[in-house]
Image (cartoon, rainbow, N blue to C red; front, side):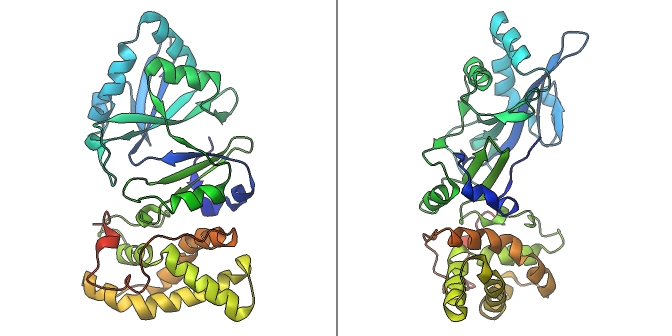
Length: 318
């Protein structure tokens, strides 16, 4: 299967027509039907684990799937058998388990829901859109919603829209190129702690403070300012400015932000080489967006971001 990736892994999607959906904050869920000699059974699960009995799911996830299991087993015989066929043969329905009962970062105004975003068609060897008859029928049988489809057909317009939204209400967007098989996600600047795979969520994790430091201060607004300065001073543009941006960004972070961060976090030492090595993973998507003409930014003032008494920007990281 082709999995959703961060934008910097597939920048070519910026030049392709895409379907854009809202990205929801929750746990990845999946539903499929496994055939066997005894007729088969439905499998409920999340990343890395699944079970036919939802009560056996680890990490307390069982209760989050109870409503979905109830929906499945309450179907009339005709719909139940049809769903077995639609989700059999290796097909998988993917959804986000989100709501107050499975709160991660964003607070939704419902208890629990299953927002569908993909259906893997094993025979086609591809994801199919919600307009495909198979996907549409699965949604109809289960009475589930699809992730909101936004009125954009390209990454640039979608990302500009994202930057105007309230980060406490929307986690990000997902851009899907069904023809090419690519799908990428972009996070709202207010949710930087999950903007890259290098984020370390727990203090016991190696390089936790380095990771937190980068995701706190490497904002779109900071990168934008340095990008424009580099382009003006060196008469370059586009991705040719990347090296200069990284050099200027590293200096800015270490001189302007690191002292305040150390005071606010009260820890000993930081691995500067780790920061230098992993900065491009976070900065590159922002520079790419700037080269495509994205100009709107989140409302944080870069001069305020290094204030050790201002912890508003790192909610959700604790």
